[in-house]
Length: 478
Image (tube, rainbow, N blue to C red; front, top):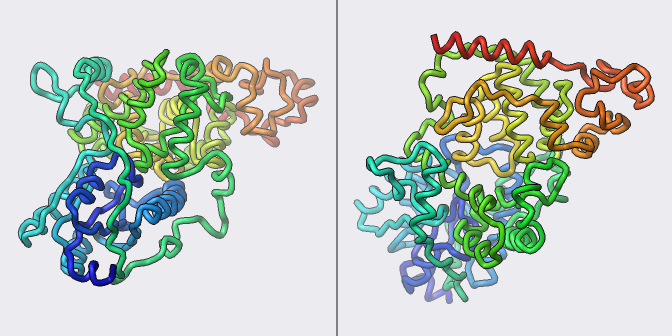
């Protein structure tokens, strides 16, 4: 094996947000080349920004899982840290590689990086191949009758469904002829120091999550067997731990492909349209990101550039720590901190509250989610925040302002979600659990709650905050 490694030029397979071995076109192409495959991961900024803390936690465990999967197939995962624009050409020379394969990414910074690397490699006479592997369809494939990209989700998704051209998922290789020598600067996963220390704030992540392809497929199988038929009705109920699939972080790190999800879901039949539409929203978000590289930092609708934000640091901090005085909002932010995830319905309510009650720029919320979500994704995160703000494509109108306590009463009617994540209110009767400020003194006393001491009074008054937001919106539009 050692002689084989030194005499035959390898193909480099550069893993990125595609940490799996099944339905991996780039890996399949590298294996089918007949050359040894050098499996590589480079730790560097993603989408032009540093990774969030929760994403780092997931990445650590996902790399461990991928390393084990590759080892079982005969390959070693080589890990480097630094600028891929420098590392890839240097590594190609070091190991005399004949080709480099990778899966495409669609944010502006990654596209420019990939163009630069591909140009350098081709100038040096090295084959450079980028492959589809993260989406059902490339962001430029589905166009309107005017030959432009879709800016509204529903017609986009209808056009996608009409095509009916999702190819079969590729099987994992039965084995990999791995290039398993040593390379300069390679480091073990632990040396990346991705896990939090002093303090370890991720202690609650282990219970709900199993990063890696095996965990992804186990979750999908359980969801399709037991919960997908009720998805349309149960996905909005905050206390239902099985109401959503929980696949978003696995998709974000590419531990399972959307094509695998698509075909496995179709096998079970039944009431799956709504669930697959959520996969479609992820696709649509990437269409928007690809055609609008600044989606995460600039208003899609320029009219919102004139909006007058209050941007109170104290109110932002209260929101981040789940201390706004609105139980449904606070429960969501505390769930996020404890588990690295927040229920989708609650994400909309908490985002609306930050933007339209507290008048904090949506970008501040997007940054917080980027840092604290295990499923932080440059397309879905940005598109969804802009949707709530009203500044995005196909956005919810700005004047749609979620009522934070009636939303709680509708989607957490017994207060189970609030009682779990805001335990200081666990003694409150459900009549007042979502608006404790209306509870009589004797009810508060019986529940052991002193507003302003045990639990905050509302940071803003709902009606006044709503009117202020609408007034500022009207002023910004002239």
